Image 1 (cartoon, one colour):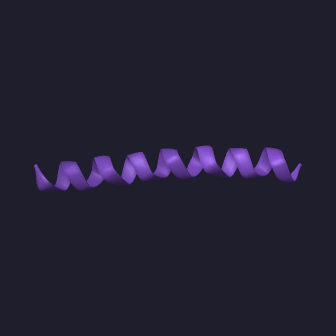
Image 2 (cartoon, one colour):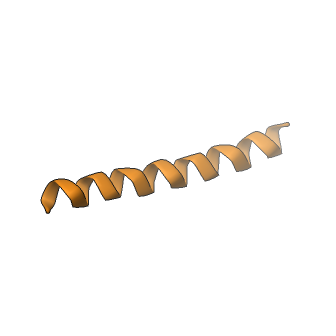
Length: 29
């Protein structure tokens, strides 16, 4: 359960970072 929670948190963070990167990329472009 703990490992799943950590993996889920990592996935959520990765998705948030991806969205942030896309936003910054669009603004910079």
